[in-house]
Image (cartoon, rainbow, N blue to C red; front, top):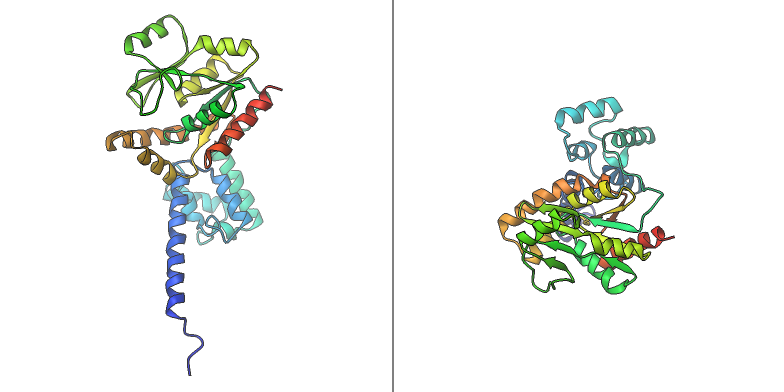
Length: 302
């Protein structure tokens, strides 16, 4: 007679695979927390909504250690202050514990609040390989009512890029002239190599005609635009995950290993600055992300 308590081999194998997948998913989520691809408040909310989710199954100790600048000593002090047991999982926290942890997170990692007032000058920025250019190109092709600014750059064209459409490709002497004559709204050295800048005249002309203008630029440029035009609406494009960002960078095949490593280091710095922006959009699907940008442009024009 067969013992009913014996677990079939196929079930044990399936359970082992699920356990491995769960651990990998938690590891990926930790990377997203560390690189600030996802806000800790969002992870806590997911754990609250679904205690059985990947977020809900994460131990609170691992959650805290995944946060930037939190070591073992700080983690233990936080748990002690919040009266949370180190064996707890995020999905198993009580109402009081969740509220206390959320309050601590809001104090340590404040989230930007969308501004009520909007401008017809929109700035789209984000880390390397997040797809800023692809989203901007989708908007150019499908929403001609939005004026897409064309940047000047000293880097060489990539395959398929057209001068005057994707960028104005200029040499260093011409770029220097644009700076000296005050013809750039913003400019910066990106990835310690090439210079990028936004010609001012086409933007001023489009705004004077009542159009909405979209700038697709880097973090340094976005900060300069905010300083020059405080009313500009700043939009930060996020990847679905850190692993996906790395995959996109490798997949486009336009940089060698050393350059990719440099860009990923820069990406971590850029992701840490997302709270300087008015709106965050996750680029999981290009068309959907573009639609979100367009919706902001429609709202800003009212």
